[in-house]
Image (cartoon, rainbow, N blue to C red; front, side, top):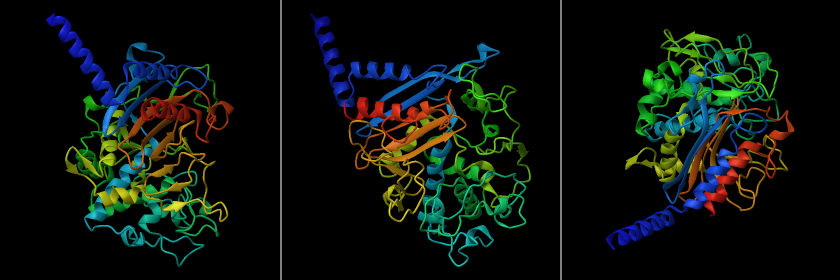
Length: 458
């Protein structure tokens, strides 16, 4: 009799727990199966993926599939994709740069509307608008009139002026400046170089190297051991680093039936030497040599640390930042950012105006932007949910084959993070990469919609 009562109580507890968590066992199994079907070797499959989802402020779901490391020659070196597997998450990194910017604003060390020239130590103006200051806010919201060109991360011994002066080694015939008609503060165009400048400003204000300041402040405050340089990791933490894969050979020829090739962080020869960095330029993959940081001077050129996209972080660690945003800047009882700073980041600094044509929407995937974060409205071409209108705000990442995202539902405590670490077919060039109901890529669309169906509206 006691056994029956105990079993009944346990069953009731299980049911109550799942009701509270908002996900039944059947839903979890269905979601797991859907994610598992996304992993494979050809077509629009991915080598590995991970998801963590929150509802009402609590984690309600997590699932991890596939591989973090694929060694075609030595399969014994293969490693599974886990909760703690770290990857270079591309542009999701941008929000971590802005977290620090907002902390420095709160401390009175930075002014969002100050001329960046006052921090950088040299005059920075778009030559087409010589009388218009470029501000910190413009950099963070991609309204600065600065452009990437082909190369936006340069060797550590060079200063940022190399991008902007006519005799600079990376001037690229003025490619880093927008043309006339795209005035600073009035036109949106996504540019990773903006965040290289923000990282340099952080160095100027703090006197510390960007990667080290991030580790000792915002990342440490969020209980995150992520890093911008693989060479910085301890041996233990380095073993958690996964690679990013594509199905193209060293000459850039795609073959989805060929082997996965690591485009980033494969490291078959082991961990890079301490205090070295490999430049990261997705638009110019042939310009990615390794450099020593021994003589680097903080405040001269933080593009080398890739504040725009170079953070190596896990799904678990991303969920800490997610929790902080869902709780108005508080993480585990600690106030990391003020509610006002979070509100500012999540707000709309720029909104696309179809009549004014005041920005580049990147095929309708970015229609408004805040500070290091943008909005994906449920009715728009940027949406991630097919049949239900669900607004999201956060950031996606896409580079070298990786796809990532951290997003929350405004005015709720719901959100999610995901990482996918490769693609077998080429984005844009292969028709299969296009989404079916939005203008997002098929991989992001599938995963985002699955989260909406199984977590948010189930």
